[in-house]
Image 1 (cartoon, rainbow, N blue to C red):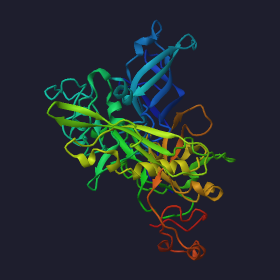
Image 2 (tube, rainbow, N blue to C red):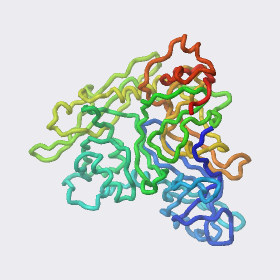
Image 3 (cartoon, helix red, strand yellow):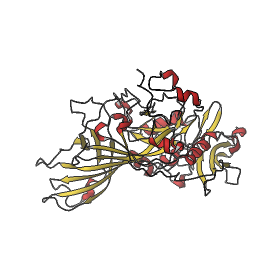
Image 4 (cartoon, helix red, strand yellow):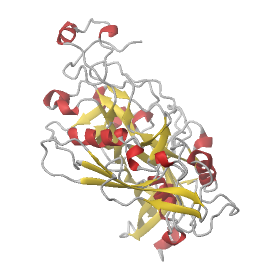
Length: 474
């Protein structure tokens, strides 16, 4: 059994950091009613970044908002596990923290109004605030004609940008020299962030797609909450294949995770599942990219039009249909580096592999983490990589073996249900595996429950037909 900290079944809702009562108490406070949901994530790693959205109903027991529900707009609303419960280990993180963006008055409930509230987290602000770009607290480095101008590489200035908005920045691309937007475009910070798909590695610029941006409110270090993060969905780690287990591969997370091999019994999958092909299928990858220049005429942005030279072919398969994935990309270097000024000189293998993996893999049905066995490990409302070892689907459809990332889902809290209060339904997407190789048939036949783990320490997918290989190593 996983020894990662259990999650309290109860939760607390705060309005402007003041806790709301669990039930009507005759005060003027609002009361949070269940069920409520937190929608999070994206459909594909290259989709537009989406804020987490809270849908909740509040009982207005003091009729504070009976004349105008709009008075609640802009107020801060927070959802946390009930860490005051002494049966659980308190950690300083929350499941949602955002601002009310929409309110509607519902029918009266015994003479009291109920308010249907929608709230979005800080990504909503970073995505919609186009007034001037990220705030550094000074304009002494502003460039005329541009909405804003980054000084140096992204890793040296991103933290400064977001800190003035009360947000930390972690795990973001480095060694890039982004091109600015013209002032008349009025772009947001997220517009800029989504264009940063190149970074320098091993002395060469790489074009990457398998990345999800999100705001994290879950960290044992309160000084890092909230933080803007990027998850790279490649899977480069070997794993011990242990049979009916779930291997969680989020090594960027540090919330007291004591075990990365939870029981697969904590996952509910449809009893009679319907497997589907990839939602989007691509045979070409197209990039329209921009980079900074410092010629005698001053700073300028170079745009490389889609003239065919910026197209990269992805392997042809027997799948019907053909489409092109077109991506806008912030550039990497100055025009003084001509070798890096052409798309053909940028390493595209990682991006092509991400799309190819998506084309090849079969989509799994909806996966739900059991609410009665939930731990912190599976309540993260952000992307993470998992491997369902010994999954029944791997025997029916071999294309499903290997690592998956859950990149979206719905957190639901419902005290009226007969079962546990929390449920977490997640949307899965294939994560790219760079591991290679497989055991021989003789090695597979020789494996039995008494085998040592030295015999089964293979790369991903090796034991996809084996249901049990023995106990997990100490």
